[in-house]
Image (tube, rainbow, N blue to C red):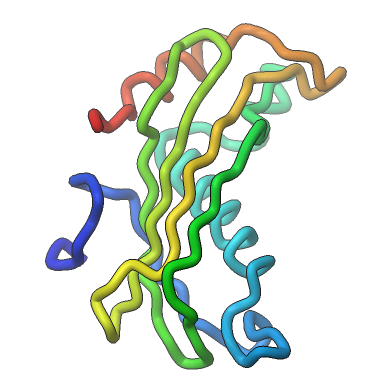
Length: 147
């Protein structure tokens, strides 16, 4: 996947094969399917970095979405395969983390979707903002891709 036109180097990637369940009444990928893929990709990356949901529970902490910016560049259809990449592009080590996403159609070698997501650290038990526990701070700041 290195020959693809990634916005930044060394993305964490998954491949997404577009299936019937992803298609809407316009016969292209539904926006909700893109959001589901964002979530799956972010969790897969977080797990690969060494943090699991069980860790989140044990630390009574979570990184929750504060804001999504979604850009749909081209429609994708049944049978398309997308290379889905993500990067952590900022982490203040206290409260906030930023991820960027880019989905590239493997057939066209073009970006079809991109997103910028801001997260805030909260307590799972109350939903209130909290400082990142050391495990979050260490893991996420070490994973930041310079932009």
